[in-house]
Amino acid sequence: MRVVRYTARAAVALLLLPLAGCSGEDSDGQDRAATPSRLVAEIRLADCADWQAAGIRERRDSVKALRAFAGGPSGSPGGRGTVLDDGEAYKLLSRACGNRVARGFKLYKLYTRASAIGPR
Image (cartoon, rainbow, N blue to C red):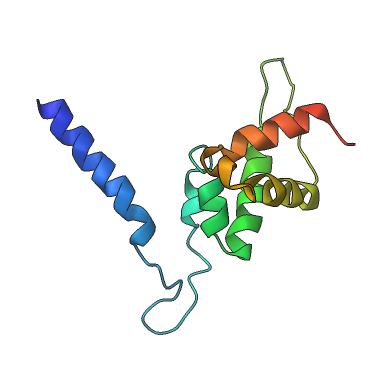
């Protein structure tokens, strides 16, 4: 019973997270550039709905976070994951997430699968 209660609280907190600080500015009118966006904070959880709701800066930051995530150490000794050019990745995600059916697609899956294919 206790686990269910904590799980429910965590779910509510996650649902309310996008509403926190919606304006993008502090009370004194300063932009919060120093704080990471919600989209970048948990890049493994971000999906196309998050991409569509994000601004240009958040999208660019998320592409950088995806590059860091995908280009990290791979299973082979000394190996690194393959990455896309940031501009190409931005275009790919904009195109893929532009389709309403894709709103639940995870950004990291789109990115890593495209990077595995390589440049076209």
